[in-house]
Image (cartoon, rainbow, N blue to C red; front, top):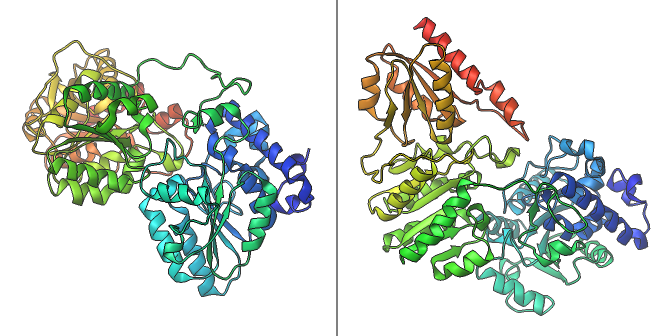
Length: 588
């Protein structure tokens, strides 16, 4: 075993060149061990194993700086930089994140990285600072072919070309994004692969960059040779390596999309360890409804930005949708502008993606879409403390972001039936830009009639009129509002319960009516308190005698949090909420 003796790249450098294939095999087995037990990104890491071994064998990290893009290929790097225990020992796995993280290892991880298309731009900053400060280290930016579709990657290439000094850009071309690649750029990459890098149509050379092609991107010895050629170069150069996503694990090779990321599984056959997972999940239910709606509405087009699985659009579903589906690749800004243009022309565009990725589109939603008032629909997925918990992927900052954009209606359904009613209205209406916060925390159904028309903007729904305390419970925290109402009833308080539905405004008439017979208004939202829905309610009641208490998540840096602990720390447990409301009521 070589791996047990490698705690840093310096240890790796003591290994004979001829033994590097064995090192790569051991690293791959460590990656498989972790993802099979802990879950995580499978295919990208397996495909970049040899390249990582070669990079650390040739370059002198941490003096030389290696910047990863999106971090989906950073597991082998972690193994070789003192964190192998987090891949070999099951008890130590929780200590290692799935992403590049200086908080975890500041010596070798240069940035917190979880969003895509960033590595070249980040590396250009290191490059410029090195040149200004008189340094001589190599700067290496790693980026996948899928990430090249993001606008920041283009901007980084443009800057690097002008700076003109040492930067090695390793393009990991495995012919895949999360799903298949989309865009004209990929015809160029295919020609480069087919011509062994000799095609005259060379995207990278069009920026004035030097270029080297390596066909056998999973051959560690060839990669060492290539990296030695470019080390200490005085100008920017692209090393374009052709790799196989999932290399060394046959299930991941045969089904690359399925194995981009996985829950824990059995290595022997790829079957999931926990077969009990499943049941209803609101985003997938919405996707199923959209696929049926496509058949009824020839104007409807579903838009994805490289995460079609977010609403259950697998390969067969995408094929069946035909022209009424488009994936723009990792280009969220393009997705929003595309949707605005489609709506302007009379189509019915629906763009669905995770809240964390929508953060990249603030300007497009504000300027390209909402300012123009074009009736596109944006489905916001995962927006909950029950969503992704890695720091770079947290999805519960969406309400402060979206609800403050003028001319954008942000809706928060509480049940499946209400979600579909809002979706159907948003698609068919022709007056407004609409975003919908798709519930993430469980699935709640109702047998009561739900409203079909949401043209009366900012009209809250009064579900129960009580007295003394009013609970305004947002979206999938409506279920929590129901439970808190029951706890208060057991203590003699018949609380009013309101489903606000609209996150981008307030129902002033209803809020004014609560001033009679109520002393406390409590807001519950599954998201950030700072700039959130509750603060808007508190602002309305500021000049009045009404006491307002807001429940949500305090603004902080959260990483791989335990949901129950997060709720407890933020007083979001049902009993805590009831107790806090009563304490305020006693002072009212």
